[in-house]
Image 1 (cartoon, one colour):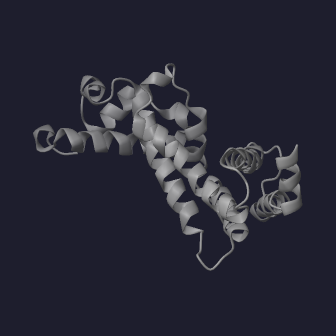
Image 2 (image 1 turned 180 degrees about the vertical axis):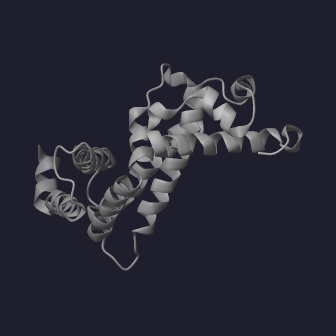
Length: 204
């Protein structure tokens, strides 16, 4: 990074996040090590802990960027000329695509667990909900008569299925062929969005 006096606190923080992000991309979340990251950015471990109270918060900073990138990737799949059902299909396939091409970063988001949930920054909590909000908007457009609670339930059930497909595939317990994975995801969402199945869900 050059001479230490040349960098602001924010610049050092940014360098640490980038170094941690590279560790995750190369070795997964288990690759995060305070001493190695401090060495990579040319600062003492103590400096790193002045910026991040613990490594959990550094990992959260990396995961926050992953979630933002995922949101943008999914959002880019939407098109105003498509129906809500078609947009949800495209969003699901975009989620699959992101998981396949950013696997270590994607896995780190779900593998990381805080010892104390109270330490989670507000910005991170809000970002976690943003993807669901995007899907809920499309779901509501597809089924305008469905109440808000049911929309929330349906959205989470659908996305849990898509997430499960990704997890099983990436752990080699389903399929590891991208086209096959896309076909499975497309089939799941197509069946899930059949109006009659959702009407039955509302009645039950």
